[in-house]
Amino acid sequence: MELPIKIAANTLIQILGRVVGSGITFLITILIARYFGAVGFGDFIKITSFVAIFYLMADFGLNAIFLREWEDKDLPKLLGLRIFIACFLIILAITIPLFLPFNEALSQGFTPFVRLGIVIYSFTILTQAVFLLFL
Image (cartoon, rainbow, N blue to C red; front, side, top):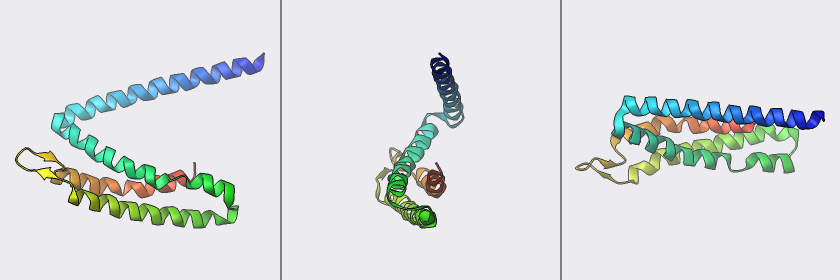
């Protein structure tokens, strides 16, 4: 009887954690939208969404391969590989927006502000890649 109670308690805690986390995310989104306005919030979303694609590429399932194929002594090799891939992705993330369109008359596309934001935010790809190593 004790196992079903533990499972129910863990499930409720997980649900509560998701609700609280979602609520906090919603409040932060409202604050950012109010502070930056519609255009600034759109630029913020462009920056974070663009870099998030490279977060996914930085993961690339290397931990699963590492756990299946390699030994503990190869952890520095995996760290080096992740750092190399992250540096390559940072360069790629900084370079691609240079070729994306921007209409100055309509102020649409990747504005210079968005490109600068991508350059600054792209360096978090490295921290994300290293963080994923230890999950």
